[in-house]
Structures are given as C-alpha cells and as structure tokens.
Image (cartoon, rainbow, N blue to C red; front, side):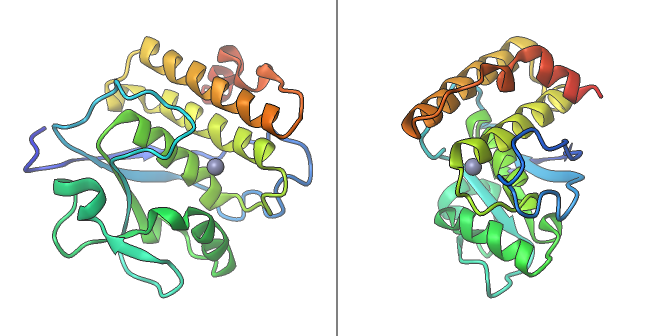
Length: 208
Ligand SMILES: [Zn+2]
C-alpha cells in the first residue's frame, strides 16, 4: 500500500440474525447486507482505541448524490483516500441516512462505500453499515447499538485475513466495545448482559 494508490477491499457483510428484543427494530433486515467496499492506504493503523467518541478518518463515499443525503467533500475527512471531486455522507447525518435509505429503499452499497484510515474508523463504519440495513426508531439506543456492535465484530472476524488482523487485535476491539456498551446501558439505567459481547458467541455467529 502507498498513500498514492489506496488499497480497495471488498469486505463480506452477511446479515446476522436479530440479537436484541422484539420491538428494538421496526424494519429489521429491510435490505440484506452482502458486502462493503473499503479503501485504505499506507496511513492505516490499529492503535487508536475504540471508545464512545466519533472516530477520525472515516468517510462514507457517495457514488452518486441523492438529494436526501447531506454531503461534504470527502477529502476533508479522509484526505488522499478520496479524489478532489468526491463527496461523502456528512458525518453528522448517519442517523438521517439510516432513515432515508430505508424510506427510499436505496440499497446502501449502491450509494456508499467506506474510506477509513484506521481500525477504529472501520469498526464504526461497520457498525453504521448495520444501521443502514436495519431500521429502528432508536427509542432504545443501548439495545439498538448492541446489534450494530455485534455485527461490526462478527464482520471484522470474518474479514480478518483480508484485513491482515490477528486474533489479539480483534479481541482488544471486542473488549473495548463491550466497555462502551456497558456505559450505554448504565446511562439508560438498564442492566447490561455481557453475554451479548461474549467472544465465543460472536465467533460462533461469525462461523455459522
Ligand atoms: Zn449506532
């Protein structure tokens, strides 16, 4: 990889079963996810931890610009991973896009691909990929996020060879996301079931 020529990977993103209580999603699986195109380059790093803050170095590149998706120049967010005239979904509009893609029945991969400079950005990009294929009213945020975290971890496991990730790196992300989730449940005054993030359960789902 060089910064001049981004590497392009096709990450497999097969749909997961619903892992959360009934009613958390109103249109679960309205579009079955299958793959996500990823761009990365020589800046790729796996050190930045995954916490509850928005990641740097992430952009969903728009292949065309439907009027219902707010956009910004992609280069502002991912530099050389995008050309000067490429647009990206505005980072503040992830929730809007979740609603709009479902409303317009627009298959996410026909509109969006991902550019990420680091593993933390990829984690949240995969998490958002789950939102884009499974619509929920977001009235139960902590539970909604469980489905998206689990999907991200399962997809990361399934693509670890293509991404060049070892099991220790995956396990560190799993533990970080579990901590983030536990804080979400605490802030909603709900009990947290760590079983949702259990290593064995996620690997079983990934290898099903
Ligand atoms: Zn989310």
